[in-house]
Image (cartoon, rainbow, N blue to C red; front, side, top):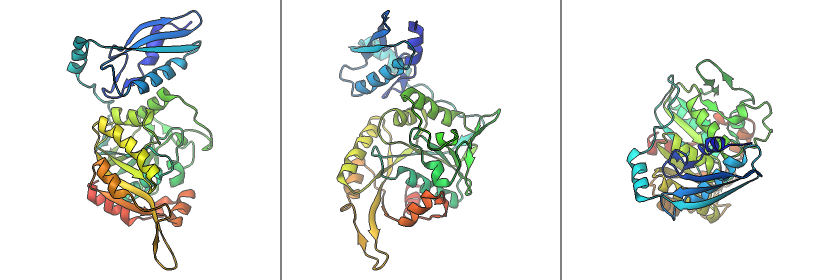
Length: 346
């Protein structure tokens, strides 16, 4: 039979998105009860009754408890903290971020985010890494897309390629010297599904940051999955991200979802370094004319919305697609990405 201590231990993996601290550490979990039938009930005391992140915390808390054996149901009600309790919490400030392996020195961390799937976050991450490496920078990629990783395939890295040592996890290294860590480098078959709940995904991302032997890096790029939940929040709250590159496509639908991601960044006070409009146009190989296959560009409106002056439009390029599919993206060069790097000072 599961006891209260085991439930509280599971709930320690659930964080308040705004404070970046465990809901257990914050004293938000109250009136915890377990029935003989395995039903768990408790109250989640919020810092403010109308907390915009309460649905996220409720979902994460329910998922964390439901992973425990013998739990049949989880019912969560909301309460509110007293003024004295809130003062005590905010007086402590935020906790220290997880410390890097003592052998690591990472100068800058840049996250690549969209909120929308299929816009090319991974290819943009890979192109950024390649151009940075060609310019002489020491670069790493942390593939935070745990359930849908694609970075290893782009670089032609085989599955099961990570090895451990007494000092930590050894990353895979590409021909340009880019260090890569991805869940697809830890499983024997790249087609195997990773069917994990939020707490396990968050824990793995933190391990990639904390336990990998990155060594000396000028830039660590973090390739994020779509959405604004577990993976994105874990990266923004437990890794010292310096800025974000937002990726979209010309369709207004994609722009709308990207603005949702930006809304999260604004709540977390995370700066947007640049806005990238991928698949913005196609250049006819016969006449050289640009065709806006997915409609007119919305990059200027998007940049204004996310409050950045740096924008770039990337073309649809069949050569890039072919090289990406065959693991040869390091042979591709992008003038547009090189210009972006210069503008933001990576």
